[in-house]
Amino acid sequence: MLLCGRAAHSDFLYRNATLGWPTLRLRGDYLAIVTLGFGEIIRIVARNSTFTGGPTGVIEVPKPPGTMPDGTPIFGVLEVYRWYYLVLVVLFIVVFAVRRLENSRVGRAWVAIREDEDAAAVMGVPAFKFKLWAFAMGAALGGFSGLMFASRQGGVDPNSFLLNLSILFVAMVVIGGSGNMLGVTVGAILLTYLPERFRGFEEWRPFAFAVALIVVMILRPQGLIPSRRRVRELADRKKEAEEVAVSA
Image (cartoon, rainbow, N blue to C red):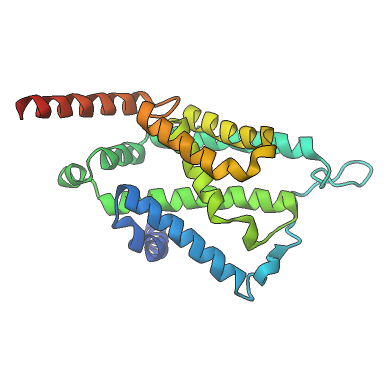
């Protein structure tokens, strides 16, 4: 059984390495840009492939099982509130699981790699392996979210996932506060609610997002609600920069 578990573990890493190897060799902004590019490549391939349904996409995605006493499905198309509570419960479960993961050995390894990948590697942390796990887990959570979205909509097509949507997700993290779930949640709420509130200015959305990102990066590079660790990091870097400027 132990050998089978190790074999499954190796196979999992190998399959994800096939996708993660071209991108995980990069760092910082370059990694984000390349992943956005791969997302656009996959969308175009899906739009022009027959096994994905082409421009029509995947239709008739099944909904969660269960029916009411009168025979109507529990999660029908018009049952908006039931879908809302279902997603809310799933969200709490995912947040709890990710919190537990952050405080585990894997989470501490991720923090070490983010702080200084070279120093973490010197201390014995297999950087590529843990970056690959982060890549795979992030993709799994995104895929699960897409599954729920497709089930709610009844189907998906490539035009539902344009590049602007990926940029919007990045903006949510940057504006809310990287490394802090509360900050990211606030950023997601703001960037989801405000465009709907000011729908009359739809043509100005890209410009407004660009201005908001520039203002946040200048005035609050740590985000609206930053993590405590991120605040300490920025303070230390600012102090180091001031010391270098004085010594020069």
